[in-house]
Image (cartoon, rainbow, N blue to C red):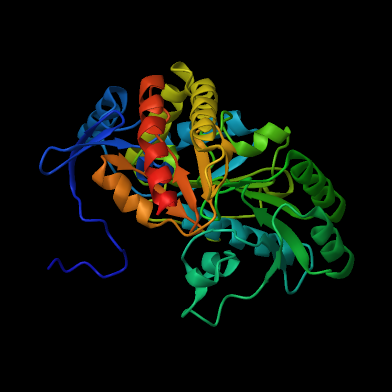
Length: 390
């Protein structure tokens, strides 16, 4: 037995290599990848531009330290600022680290505003990570169980419910920020309404709160915009990124703007590996390819085709609730727990995921072709029908 700590219920397959939207196991069997490493492999597998850029960078320089200037990090921060309208970027290695940075920034901001016990509003069904602070902010008791006492300073409200936040604003003087996902990923592919985001932005401005968006799963072009909140035409005070930013190379980022910019000073936060040359070249290349190859527009058209195909195939089938999402972030909700579908799909050469117990989650690489999208629907719909038929 491998000496890996038993923290994952791994499926009985190991992949040897990949090409585009295909992965191949040790026996050579091919699988259509509709999960992209959980929204990570933005450019699929073995993308020639990414492979070349990373190889060239490995031959030059992989890591120095944030003790020194890192020109690749400077370039990546400039690019993200230009795409987002934000002012500052802190690089780290993962989504939970990016959210930890956001939580720390909000607390420091609160103290600078004279709030002794700063509180952050978070949402039910949210997922922000598995470190102590981020799992405390997460709205999932399964993630939190066994790790009490949780970190205090979070106030939870129903997702997409502006009235609940208005009530909090009227009675809780300790609130300094709101943290939410424009589309909840682990929570079941639940999009926030545009009106909710606009109203929340207005409340944050009125109350001098930080408007903080977790775009770890829904950002980097997946929904047809660089960042999902941009569909509402707003700019946050804090935004967190990771997953698809490096197309498989670990990188996270916490961006700040407006009243959140300038809160952190030297010594307030840091990361040993964050922003190293290799990770930042991966991010720059990912952003370049998304832009040059029109992958955001493609995410919209292909995502629409997949959702419409699923809707046609499952409409009227007992047990099918709905298909929802935005771009290539798609959830198919059933009326019963459906985790067994993951193994059934694996046997059929299809990689999917189930989240929130009853939602089939599709997060394919942005490079998935129209033909592969049709193949995905053609393979998945019969599997779901068979499952629902018992």
